[in-house]
Amino acid sequence: MSAPTEAPTETAVDTQKKILNRLRRAQGQLTSVITAVEAGAECRDVVTQLAAVSKALDRAGFTIVSSAMKDCISSPGDTTDSITVDELEKLFLTLA
Image (cartoon, rainbow, N blue to C red):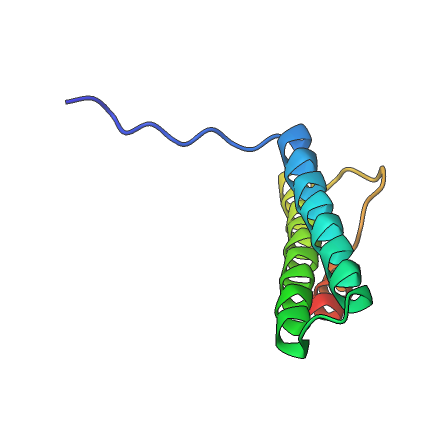
């Protein structure tokens, strides 16, 4: 029987791509919201689209903060572009 293999860890480049994809998706959704408002779309449709934009932005923000948390845990002594636990908590609460 073979030993279980661990899932590959996500690199900083992978994380950045994921964040950019989420932000681009939110940008496209926001363009749709603007177009819908300009066209006089139903309130229900506009709010639904706006909620999708908000969720996409929240997910991007949480991914950015969680990435910073991982960086702090994996290299706690690294002082370049370091962020304190208090700063991370404040950023996280800003999104909550």
